[in-house]
Length: 250
Image (cartoon, rainbow, N blue to C red; front, top):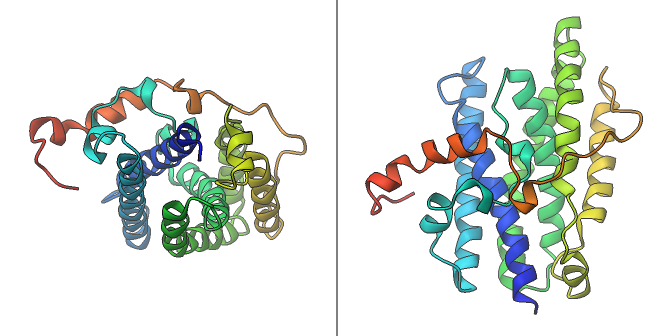
């Protein structure tokens, strides 16, 4: 097993979960309705817990403990895609990001459930159950608001146009892609993207929304530590308690 390839894969998945979990937590007390306030808070807890489990796998492979990995790295050390670090914006943007990201995650963990690295396969099978509900939540609201009023459709369409190039960055190719595929650890970003496109197309087809007719240029960089100006302030806020009290638990 190529440990370096495996670590790279784990870092980017775990960092995605941690950062989107933190963004989702920012809706606590701020949701447009109480139901959504609770839903985003619950999903935040799930995703931060998932990131902890993935960081623990990295720790088992010789990396630092989860707290150090999560709270003591600077932005350029993070491997998350840029989509998850963007500010929440209005609810329509957070909902579209939730839909695009969690659809990709549902497919990613479906593929990882068959990984030849058994600790990752076991964790993926556990996470699949949680993400299935996240994806169902997103699909329900996209369907509801994507067929509701002229305003809701226009706002979602505008957010979809803005978020879509960032969403393509989820599938940024890895230099170790072929190793992961050859060793059966992960089926690869290309296959993941094809399955994601099929799933989101089905949901969008049931609404008044339109996907881009041709793929816009993907916004890459996150997997290689190149981030927007929004990530470092988020990390500073996220790590504030840990830096004051390193004995605090998640």
